Length: 247
Image (cartoon, rainbow, N blue to C red; front, top):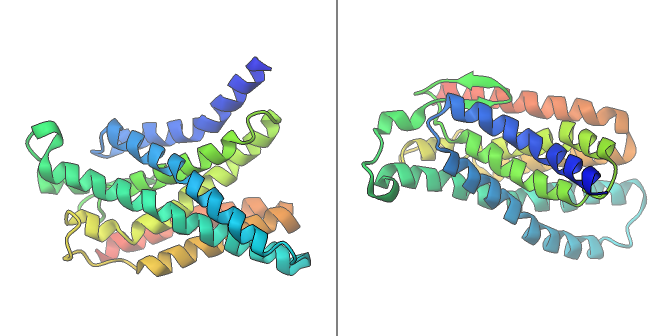
């Protein structure tokens, strides 16, 4: 039993470890920034669960395809992505605050170094076109996904492997959508001079729709779930590249 729990824990945390390892090698973000983002995303699961329980109880009498769709797009998609926006925003703004003021009294970094490229699904997008804080948004999403996976630690390892391949990248991709709405402001230290690639409501709406599509696919057509995840990750990369060109 202990061996299986240890194996399941390793499976649950592995995607975040791999992503953060790659991101630390391609950005100027300190490991501490990634730790904070991961923990912030992890903590956000608790208020999300509370709201989801309330909304689910309100939809208890709705069944069939309509019920599944409402639970996928509203309970899972909208609620989770609205709540997840808070750790994404905090992580990105906290990193830029630290850069602007210096860590523990150290001199602040050169502002030009604060846009040191991003890594989304393995894609390297260099400075200065895109700010270098998007990996923190993705890491917050991975922290959220990790605690979700923790509820399955006592289950089968094969289930956690499937979630590591599907649910975890899905959370990372939707967190990237949220981060892209904040990225230009982060590039200017959070000032009003940054021009958003798209609005925060649009980012949350996109994330909720993609998340809901995945949950509905899992419920109604499991074979489509991997295709939804691939499309979600591809869209994150495409949007990041477009944001780079428009910045």
